[in-house]
Image (cartoon, rainbow over all chains, first blue to last red; front, side, top):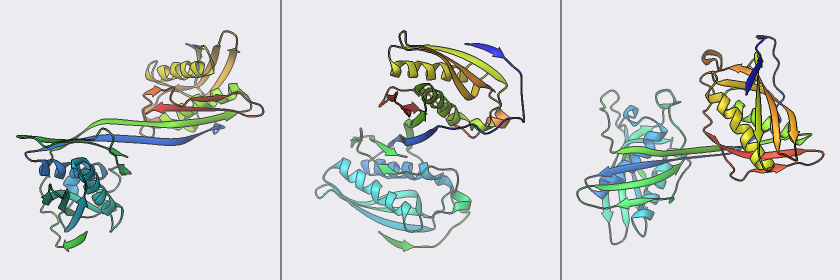
Length: 158
Length: 158
């Protein structure tokens, strides 16, 4: 690797002929959340997802949305809860939550209800900072319901 | 999922308590390049890599850098050629190529020489548009040396 010459020709260049294109583009990020209870860890996993779309400190608590989720264990319940909120963010005027509150958690039926406090996406105040979340994944998902600290690891496609 | 209320409180909000963090972040993109010859497909695979870092139309041909690569087959040769240019982009004043020319290709020894026409990275003119390329990968790599069209598929970590 050696420099052969260094004569500049600024301003005299043409567009490059391009015989290439970009195909797939995949990306993901792992959210790690925690709490004193497993409910709190669930809440912050969802908030971590919203914070990836837009800085949640900038989201106002103008609107409250309720979500129900069902599963057969912690993992499927987490998946469906996050998926329900992800769905809200893609529809319903692009609802963004700043805080989440689990209001019901039935461990026998594996059902959950949660409230999301937030507002519809505002391009001026929320736009341009965040990243689209494409999907929740089960990949390497871990849910630890423990005392004194519960933890969650979940990977989302972005 | 139903809206429970909708009373706005703009300007009266506090920062959210956050019990989450983002861990891994992985991303990649597949470059597809082609040419009348396999050499041309190699050239455009490298150009596709540089174009991901910065728009190569905006790179001036001020400087020519020569790179040598060795391998044992098409795939390893492509890997090492791209890796050599990636190395130049991380060192040597962050050299960016707008065009690549393969000057030697020895199919018996699997060696290659190439010239890169470009300039050192200029934060003002090149900055802020591109993405860091972290590594070349062998993942799903495909090299087709065919007439009348040669093609390459290579995934790079970004």
